[in-house]
Each structure stands twice: as structure tokens, then as C-alpha cells.
Length: 121
Image 1: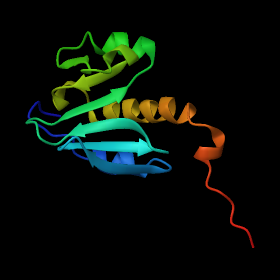
Image 2 (image 1 turned 90 degrees about the horizontal axis):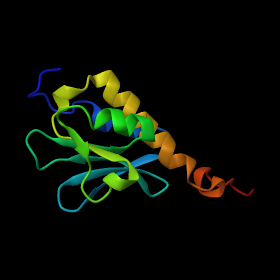
Image 3 (image 1 turned 90 degrees about the vertical axis):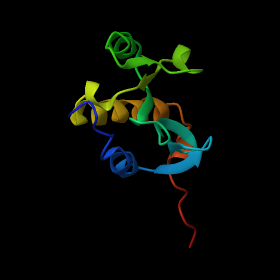
């Protein structure tokens, strides 16, 4: 993926995850959520676009060593990273990392909020 590329396909991938929704927040940030909890944020106002997501501790340490990836402002201490340039990761790596973020966030959601309620007859 060239360094000038955008995060093509990120929106579609995020919305393909079970129970994922999107909401425009903070003016120009497209937030992807599961059960109301954010698992990824796509900055629409920056050029190139920026992508933010949560990581496991070991992956966080590895990613922040890559030029173009930094701890995310305000939430970096919770192991969220900000990918400032989409070309530093392949499309497959981005999908894997976003899926990992989704799994980390959804694991903290109480079971009763994760599963849709059964309909009474």
C-alpha cells in the first residue's frame, strides 16, 4: 500500500464484525463501536486519514516502535495507538489489528449486553 493511500476498506471491515455500529463523533471522527464501546476510530478530517485502535500490551510496544505509529492522544496509556500514515501497515495487518481491538473491547462487555435479547412469543 503506498504511503499516500487512505484506509480503504476499513469502514466496511469494521461494520462486518458482529454487532458493530458506526457513529460520527467529535466533529470528524468516525467511531466504530460494539455494544456502545469504541473499538476503532477513523479520523476523516486529516490527510492522510488516521486510524486509532486498542492493542494488547506486547503488540502496543511493538507498534509504537514503527515510524508513523504513536501512542494515541489521551488514551495511549490504555494501549491505544494512532496510525498516522496508512502505508506503514498492509491492509491485512490493519484488518488483523482492528479485529484484535474489537476482541479486546467486546471481551469486557457483560454477556447480557453482548447477546441480543430473545423475543417472547
